[in-house]
Image (cartoon, rainbow, N blue to C red):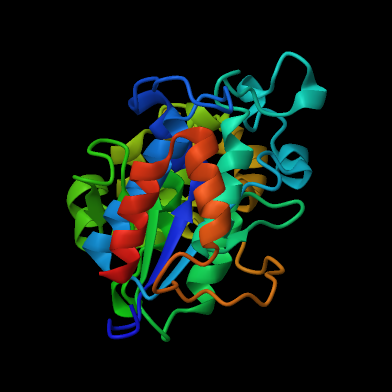
Length: 310
């Protein structure tokens, strides 16, 4: 991979392995007795991404804390509907997926792809920190099925989102500022974050402002420049905001005080000093062979090895 132009690929790992779990049919039983559809699908995704985008650096970003307390303190409904019946168990994860996650972690180590998380932070925050740290050094591709990360898009630095929600990694939406303008009528990743705070997101338990969806939020951001500009217009009695819209924005004042903290990904997560360069071959062939035999993963690992040597 050393002959390629520098490019950093940041994987939203949970987004991808959840997609693999639901999208890849159950596979034949293997010696370990553990289901392997999510593992195989995740490895196939990585092989496809390496082959298509030729990154020189790759990180599997990890949710060390999928629902950080500091976000819950700000907005108690944040991801509340996804908490398991026993809150001590954390996020509700399908029984057949749970045992596959440690196998994915082992597989990444065998391949030589660093897996980075941080205590008290989500994978999104790790992605945000790494993306910002490498701006100006190399283009960055963020691979996710989560719209939240559209806020990182920045054409000037070559930061894009490879959005897998509709077409997977084989036919993704490549999100640039042009995509944001065409799809959401916002000019930048920053503007998307402000729009998202106004709009809210029921899938994350963020209420948003009553009566404000994508179009209205985008129009407000366009008219007043930013969420801060919208709030200043409300506070100053700007006549362009009136009636029910003004009343709803005023009623949501407490929410809007904290929404940016929750919606915007962190840019200052403590990241260990790790070599992010993608290896030119499998880093630990012995571990790879064991995993391949125990879990029936020979074909996915072969595809990874071919991609690395490409």
